[in-house]
Length: 515
Image (cartoon, rainbow, N blue to C red; front, side, top):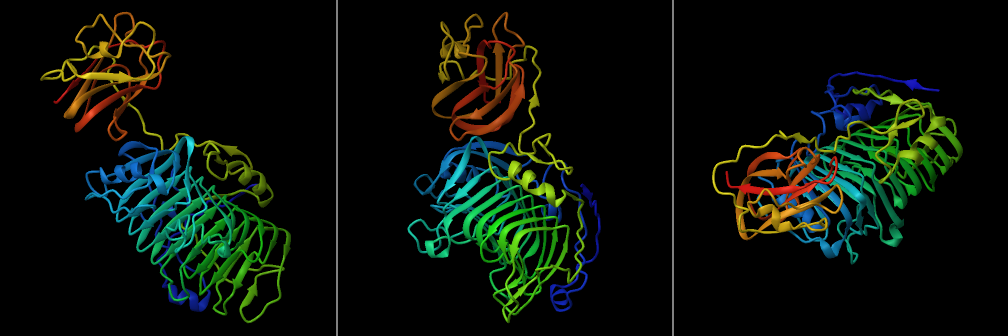
């Protein structure tokens, strides 16, 4: 049964101390509009979370290339989307220096930066024994990645212990369709999967899988660190986790439509005056899934619509305050954004079909079925290019006399034909897509390109990307042959990649110009 909740409530923020003392209604900050098809939950508030939208798109296959992309921006706030494919590990993650970054070897450090999207593409992105750490940063999206087996501080592969960790004045982070996993608990050297500390606010974790760990994650590192909060957890799978799903010290969490399987010691641990709204979750084969545990400093919860399937509860004690066996609300929490609840009975099927990396970014349609968002917020929108015969930019065609190479070519064609000044010769890919590059022995400034199709093949080229082949940065996207302009870039190699065509393309000339 569908339970629409479309709540749009806003009020002035009460102080954390007052809320902790009274357990009363907790008013939330004023709502702001979420980007359509983008961030959900609390990440949609406080101005919203858009990541690298509107900026350059760069491809990275190593951790070092991720750092290079961050450091290559004009400033630490220049928007960028980094598409990641392959395995990122300690061996391929070096420190890179620059005015727009603050990186470290052996860890993906998003530190003192903003407006970044990190998204797995292609065959997938796996961060192996190497976590993603966000420090003093804002407006960050992490999507469609796997992070596994990150060890605690002091181990040979240490980077702080968390699969994804946020710390020190972090704002607006959306983690979506991620898989975070360990291979044991604290005694085996593993720490938290998803931790927030030291003034981290406006975070959403959605459609993600957290498994095989002693600790799912915490919000606040001590009973006195109460400046974290406004965190949404929805449509996540927690599987074979001992505790902390999450541990919430102070602050506010909205926890809905999650599927919890085999929580071995405890689950949602609301303490130190925290307020948790817990709606339409499904708990299965678990123990003490909600309450205040391991402390006498209690927290609060509002519960509705949850299913408890083979859940056991321990007896209350001085430092053990389970909400069950018949959980009742002991506070009321207002939520400032719109959301729709799936019925708890649908949650196991919905979450197992959507949560985690490489699930096609599928989401719930709010009616016990799944759908794929359109458009995908991480996909760049192509820039249409006039397919008619272009006007030659001023200056010298820098391709004349340069080198050339590319992907597999059709029989009888040559890469060099695209930079010989002869419209009667051409290069064709082996199929309908492929790439061709122009290169120079030293760095050359380029700000305009003209792609000319051979006679009889005009209009065949469809979608394309123009790449800085030195860094993998996307200079421009579009469709059709013609003139292409972009900010002047110093490079040694530039690539025209055809990603869609109406037949076999024939590129007669790949002209490049300084202006």
